[in-house]
Structure formats: C-alpha cells, structure tokens
Length: 64
Image (tube, rainbow, N blue to C red; front, top):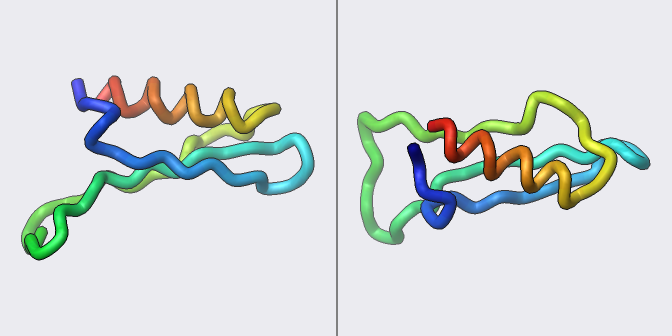
C-alpha cells in the first residue's frame, strides 16, 4: 500500500463534465532515479467532477 503523501495528483477536465486525474510520485531534488521505474498514470475513466477524479486517483494510489 502506497502513501498518498508521496504522490502529487493533478486533475484536469478533458471536456465539459469529463474529469480525470494524473498521479506522479514526488521527486527529491538532487537525487537521480536512474534505473528506477516511475509510477505515473492517469485514471482510466472519466468522472463527472474534479473531486470524484481526485478521489479515484487516491484510491488507485492506495492499491499500489
């Protein structure tokens, strides 16, 4: 289970009434992540509101 505080979530509106959220792990300045895989993703479904999209991203983070 991943910790939500280790990720930033950005929501965006694809078209009116269709929201998605992108999750990106926080990068520490000055550190290299060579050879490591980052877990960036976008929610697979559209949501009716920004808050629903953000909640969906938080649930996906917890599943990691």
